Length: 214
Image 1: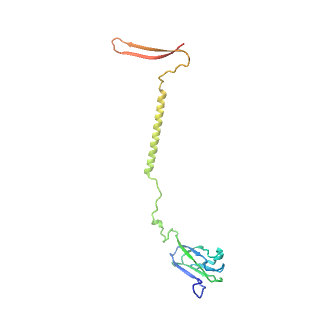
Image 2: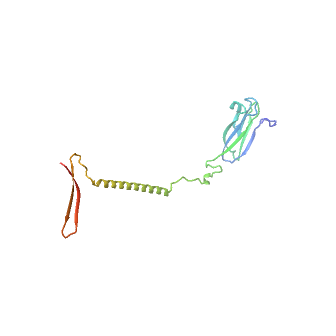
Image 3: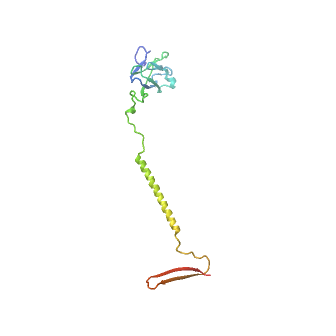
């Protein structure tokens, strides 16, 4: 600003930016003192929409050194009844060195109460958001049927095992246990034949008997 070749340095440099009315804006101002040769010589003001948003800016005091970048954030509305946003810098009236710097400026539009960046119509009215995942009835029915089939199968296996065990327990052994005493054993074969006259039938019964010796 000091090198602008102007006679009167007691004025502001202003940027007029077109914006949408009735919205709030996020403003980030970037500073870096690349013009001063010593500390505490550059003091200036920052104005947003003609209001002194940051008075008496002394970058060397704020940072403690020269040539060090720093930024400050602000939130503001557009100008009243105008579709503009103004940002200005100017030297402080008490400063010995009449100068000011603004190295960068960012302006972001903030969505309104309708969560929209364009009027009162929300973006949700135009974008089809995917609905929440719902469980399909066919999948539920399939899972239930599979569970029932598994339960019936287990019951059938259980009944089969119980019946088999019961049948095995009711069968009589086809052998007789040997006596535990040391007496002699006598095995006798018994054969009985019965025949009636005038008939051709013959009944024969054979068996083995174990007799424990006295």
